[in-house]
Length: 115
Image (tube, rainbow, N blue to C red; front, side, top):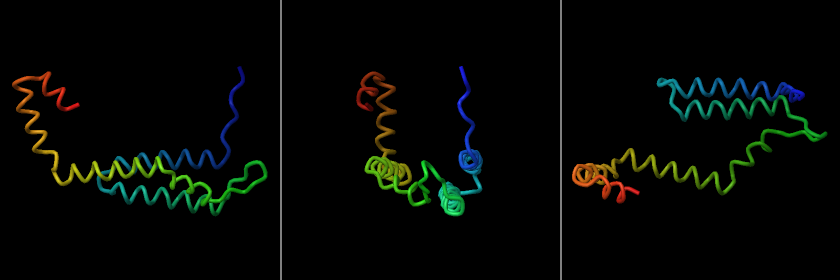
């Protein structure tokens, strides 16, 4: 069974960028938003300075970022924002305390209500 072809320079650069992003995401001193913006800026600069050529067509950074407007991605991001808002405001704390009290009385009923 033959091996798959090795990635080109763009693929290797993106792999290094992913490793760098994962390292940045684990650092507490760098906010997640800042490291995410840095990764997007690195992608933008990298693909504008060194465009990717596929099947004779030159792809620029704008072609890669056009996928960020997809409805499913926007819906998932909106759900993440709403969830983070619920966590930061503590809106679910009273419900969590009620379920914890109910758990000591009836775990199965508490599990049913949580679902």
